[in-house]
Structure formats: structure tokens, C-alpha cells
Amino acid sequence: MSFAALPAPPYFAVIFCSTRPDADDGYGAMAARMAELATTMPGYLGVESARGADGFGITVSYWRDEECIAHWKADLDHKAARDEGRSRWYEHYQLRVAKVERAYGKPQG
Amino acid sequence: MSFAALPAPPYFAVIFCSTRPDADDGYGAMAARMAELATTMPGYLGVESARGADGFGITVSYWRDEECIAHWKADLDHKAARDEGRSRWYEHYQLRVAKVERAYGKPQG
Image 1 (spheres, each protein chain N blue to C red):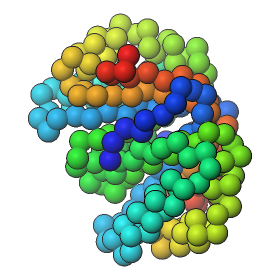
Image 2: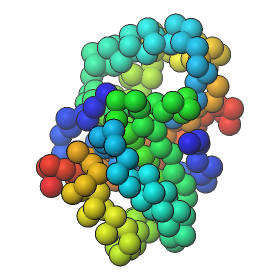
Image 3: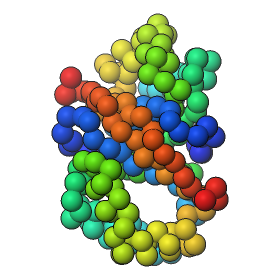
């Protein structure tokens, strides 16, 4: 995983934190399918993701505006994946929707 | 690492992504010291963090308002750690400041 190449703010971030058990149990395939599907959604800007050896992970997806987030949330395949995620893959999760107001980094400055 | 226990939105998130080489080189001790120092800052609400085996990591710290983020940014020990981070520890990083507008999760609802 690596850095998302994003436009200048403002844009929106969906911060998704979750804990997972060790066993894959179909999770990797679903996650890859959803990541691919997200890239086809209107207003999708990029994603950044990391999961530590302890099973705690953070995925931040970036979107042009709230309407695009609502559209992605309403996608039926995504809905089905979330339902399965809640019942089967995620022990616990937390989702936060935030408006990114400024950004900077290295080597960009 | 685990979930931050946060108040109801709105509050602010600082989303910090970075890549690190394998060698620790004093990084772990600095990171622990900064995490501890952050908890003493006014308006600090919590932190969530994950780094994958590939060296890509995401740390999200949460703050009451922009003023508290500015105060934390101005702390001299934090400034020194950031300077050292830029020159010594982080190959690349990206920081985004965002206003969290809503949040939900499991099992909280």
C-alpha cells in the first residue's frame, strides 16, 4: 500500500478502523474486489491502508464530496460486502467521515 | 493499537501517513515519547495507528479543535521530533487535517 495522489483540498475522507481475526476466511478477496469497485465510483480520489500484525487496521478512502460518499455507500455490492463484513470479518469497526481542509508532506514540502 | 474512545463529532483528525525503512534507529522510542506527550496536550482526544509489514503506516490523532492542533504543532519537543523524523526516519510522509463530521461503528451502533 502506498500514498494516494490527491488533488488540493478540500475533499472528504472516510476513516475506517477495524480489528480482524488472523484467519483470512475470504476477506482478502472481498477487500480486493471492493477496492477495485471503489475506483469505478464517481468522485473516488484514492485510498491509503495499513494493518499491523496485531490485526488492527486503518483504511482511509478519499472522495470529492459527500454526495459521492453517499453514492458509494448505496452501491448494492458494497452494501452486501459491508453486511458480510459486519457479521463475518470484523470483530469491531469504527467509521468516521471527515472533510480534509489542508494537506502537506515530504517531499512535496 | 486499538480504537480511540472519542466524544460525538464534530472534532478534528490529523491523518499522518508515512513510509519507514526496516531498521528501528531510535524511531520506536521517539514515537512512544511523542504519543505520551500528545496525551498531555490540551484538546487531545485520542489516537489510532497501524503499520503494515511493508513499512507503510497510518496514524490518526484526534483533537477538539484547530487551535489545539496548532498548539501541539508548536510544542518544541514535538517540533524537534518532526525535524528528526523528516531527516532521519521517514522516507516519505503525508499529513492531512480534517474535520470529522459524523461517526458510527460496531458494536456502538
